[in-house]
Length: 242
Image (cartoon, rainbow, N blue to C red; front, side, top):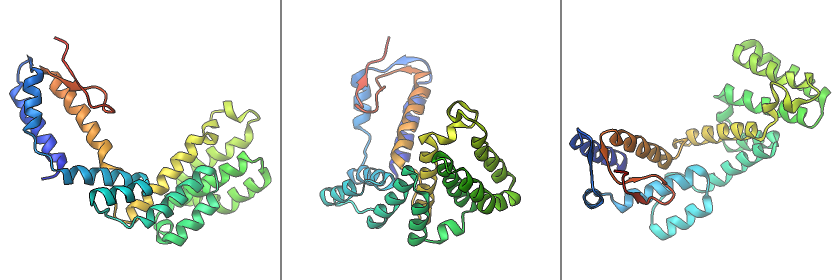
């Protein structure tokens, strides 16, 4: 049984016993936690999944050596994926596209939305660098034809080209396109597409489990006062306010 279902089952059993608002003491709660059997192998797989998905290749290699946990993809591909992601974050979209095609040309061939967003990011970078004529030419030749085929693409293109209409772009209604968060958004999209092409989850499992922990604690908190984890970075149990 996976760690996800073990945690969910145990919390469901505890919640079922707390049908009315009651106080669960620290001793009782810690005893229940000790009764939960979580295999070390499952914990190690969670850690490896996080390291691989987030691209910490050196940490993944070291963790494999120390724990004996094998990743579910070739660690060498992480280096390629991170190089692509970092190129987008630097604003070097052309380099990123070239690297993606070297890694697996089907990624962009089968994902027109991703390719449009990369080209859109190229347009944003041209505008950022003040290359107005080049930006207009690029928009007309590369993006406009795609906008004619897709209304959503056309709206995004119009919003991007609108950057040229404002002298003070930062305070304009479309100024967020020049923010670093836009680069990060595009980089995250290409990162997810590469992971999917490698039959790997695009999001790590650990944050999902932490969200599940928060949700289940809140649900149980409606029916019982019990020691809970308020800071997941320390995982310290805090006594309930009685």
